[in-house]
Length: 286
Ligand code: SF4
Image (tube, rainbow, N blue to C red; front, side, top):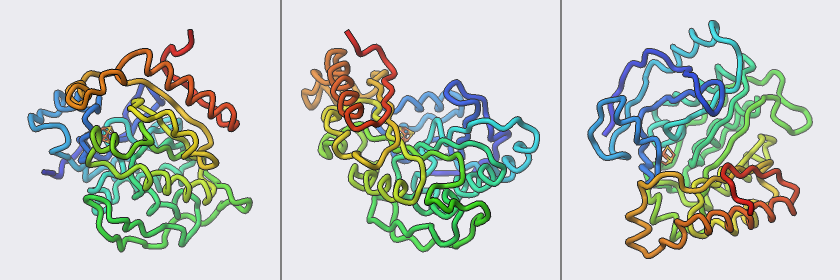
């Protein structure tokens, strides 16, 4: 279920980056472990996480005003929703916010699980005609006919790199598709995310992977991501929301500190060997 709402502000202060921009409240992917469900408390939603989305229909208008008043700094898109969840195909709020941020020269850090971000390659690279059709048969994302071939062309990189300070990261917690389906059944399949990362990287966009939370089967991700990410982040499972899934499928051994440490060690070792900077967000050594 979704509804259209009018937000009061769109560029908010964040502990992770100076600003965070969330065009939506709620997330259709409804991942079992998602920490963002705390948003229910602030928005009066009583429905299960993943079953509601509020669309901030005035997000673009607000950003146009706020960007003139605030000091430029990195913007995280998004902190408590996926900016390319299925409704974005219709509303295009992330696309238009991105266009404003990049045209004003603000650094942007996108984090998503959705190949829909490929639609906005023209904006990300500053080149007309680079947006892609992404009809990949994903759940909730049918064939797409949304290319408008607009977007800034001035400043487009001649050396094949995007002229913007804009990084696109994919959250991928496991290389095991069966495990992915247990923990985040409504999110796009792993190989679709990997394919999207490849296209972004080949188009000259800075890419990263957020291996968080570490799910069973995360250890082989560096092999899958070889040559298509510029850097990597790793974090353990920090919340208990998905504990019932671990118990139901007898996966408790993958919810322990020793698993998280061992997986982080293996992942970091592999990325180090590949020359990919990898930051682990919890104490994993020793
Ligand atoms: S995609 Fe991200 S924001 Fe959306 S439910 Fe999953 S973890 Fe939460």
